[in-house]
Image (cartoon, rainbow, N blue to C red):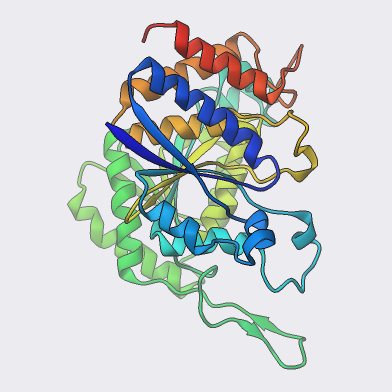
Length: 356
């Protein structure tokens, strides 16, 4: 079976970490006799430099015609430090989500035994943490059409807009995840203050009858932010709106001890995107020191989505082995630190020489 994979390296460390994920996928391709067709395209700051558009039409058409998309990272200090920049790399990410209908971001948050001491939280709080954050991606304040500044520039405004359809679509996915796990769903909102949050809560309450096996709890976002740090093991599946999910998922990533360990998937109406949760880390670009494991684990999520469960498990087993053998980059190393490319080589080699 031929599988078409669009590869979007992006900016900063994006090309380096994507290179290792592709290396691992090629090892899977060879080991399990598949046919993966990789095609690269521009996105982010590099796309602005070459085309003036952070998400060019050519990239969109490639993504639309692909079975899955492997994405690195976007962002460049040149734009971060210029508040008057008319076009920004991040606009490419928002455009990709909107054009491809990427309505839900899925972030599994799990801890790794060898990294427990790297977490800022106490060991007894994080051992066995295993929950999934499901964030709505195409609505809310990031996409509100009414935004701007007053003529004198002293006031600015953004609008937070949600429809019942947008809420029910992502919540249906969250309920389905809960059914496959511990049958518990936490809906995070700010319904005591925001009209949009009240619509979220009403919509989810209406859906509860369709999923009688799932226990549903409702939690204000400020409380959720505290609970994720003080009692993360209480969660199973969390569903929330765009901005809350953006903040809470980044907070959750700290639990593991390294941003370089967590993968994610953005589920779309046409195709899906698989990417590490971290940013472009421009300070490390070109130094061959970035942690590729989150990107490699994102590739495993991609294999799952394609129905290649055994292959995905092989990738995860190889990552577990690299952690056990301490073949890791400097951000999580306790002894010798390996280069980005060396970690990718080791994991690809492990897949090639072992049975699964």
